[in-house]
Length: 314
Image (cartoon, rainbow, N blue to C red; front, side, top):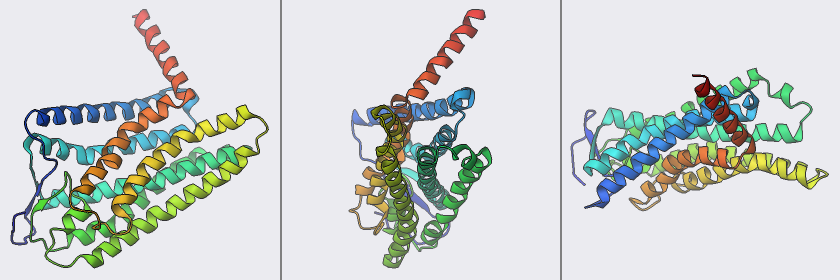
């Protein structure tokens, strides 16, 4: 990595992934296709929920909010990933780098809180069915959704601001976007204290949220096991299975990178793990929520019939 004098206007170099020969255009085209499919899939979920009246329930409202978040989440990092795949390195200004760092972590923390809210919604629907619609009114839905964004963007201020104030003596970031650990490896000073603060802030925020999710699903499991028929138990489990899958994918990969010590992983390993929660999970979310959800499949059929009718009339 190159040595540079620390200035506020310095640029960083994103090293990205090493691809050579025929693999470079294939990697670029494959990433671009997955990115476009991710955008299309999440947009499709949003439009479907907004246009089909039978999906106007709290669960699908939060799913559409998650899809909206995923659009921004994946778009925060994939453009620089595509640029590094095409040009092998990508130059990025320090200002843009730190903005990317903050926005990425803000959206990631927001998703953590949103997954907790979605677990709460499922808990109220299954464990308190008689009071569910009163407890989860439209106003409450909007308040909870807004609170996740405020909490996420507030919690990310600490790690992002601490990293942005470090003095940097190196400029080559061993990642495809500006993230905590790769940037701290470039600092001129000892960053162990920063690692501890980052791990504590991110660990407490995400850890408490994960405990809440596990507690809520523990209550859901007890309630479901008390249901009289196997059919009703299967239906209750099916409404939660998609959300559980997303939680496992997101938390397993994110915890590996950030909780404990953000700088504890070997250099270069974190960018491979980041592909799971920053790139693969947003791509899989629409698939998980459509292929494993009968109500969404039925809504898709109704939309196709509606479109076919409109085309025939024209």
